[in-house]
Image (spheres, rainbow, N blue to C red):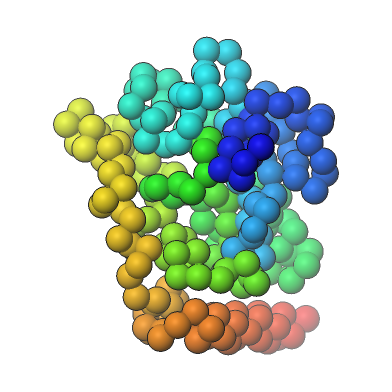
Length: 222
């Protein structure tokens, strides 16, 4: 199976056949897997399973799903949000266990995904990872550039006027793909970085400040 279709393979298979290194949890409707190339300390994908009247074609990506029956699309995304909420609670518990505090978790879709089959990213906002290697990796998750679509925003689309919904649901690649080539800007302080090594060093410095601050808070309350 090609790398492009590996998520579709997971969604179609019997979850009991997936190794523990891949599958984190499952429900009747979704699979939660570890991202194979995590871009932060915590990074998971929540996938809708191919079940009932939903076909793999219906679930190929967000754009395709939104072009199908609107009510069914809303149901799928609402289900993803429900199961992502459970996952976020698990992540926060692990954060406290490992680090003594919790920090924000982003939950959303890439406007133009790089892999087949709809998948929801649930990722901590530290962006500390050896897998964060090139500009498109970072810009695809930057919380304010617009390529990363928070699931709460997508759910709001369903309440918009039909014409607005139709426009937003198009998710035209020519609108979103240029975002991946924009300048590297720290999401914390808005400083522009000249290249990825500089950005990664800066993100590590910022993360170290967070750790130090939380350590100081812990000492004051102990």
